[in-house]
Image (cartoon, rainbow, N blue to C red; front, side, top):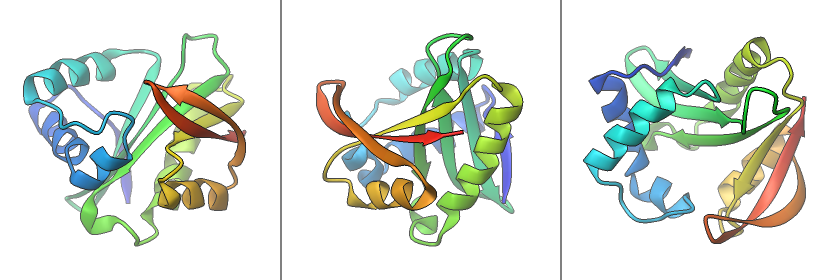
Length: 157
């Protein structure tokens, strides 16, 4: 598997758009409604140019596997929030751990001051809960994210 930084290109924007509008991804998201292409284009351009977002795409040969984003409040923040999505054909095949290993290594290189990764998960998203716990995250709180209750999982680096 290979990892690379997302670029503000049509092809990167479209693979993320299609993944973001996948039925299972939308159901697991804090906002379950589909995303219009014009909104996604603006969001994507902003995300890939934001110095407080690390946006990684993963490929197996030429096949798009998924994406991981880390976001921090500012360049002094020591906590990064993670977002992860895996393409339907790769779900359940154990690629999440490798994606996380590769992206955490990059996060450490680029944002060495980050001491913890925070994952917000909807309570009914059992697959994500199991994934984060198995990887070594610890459930530590409940909060509201975009008006939706979520369980927070933290990985200390």
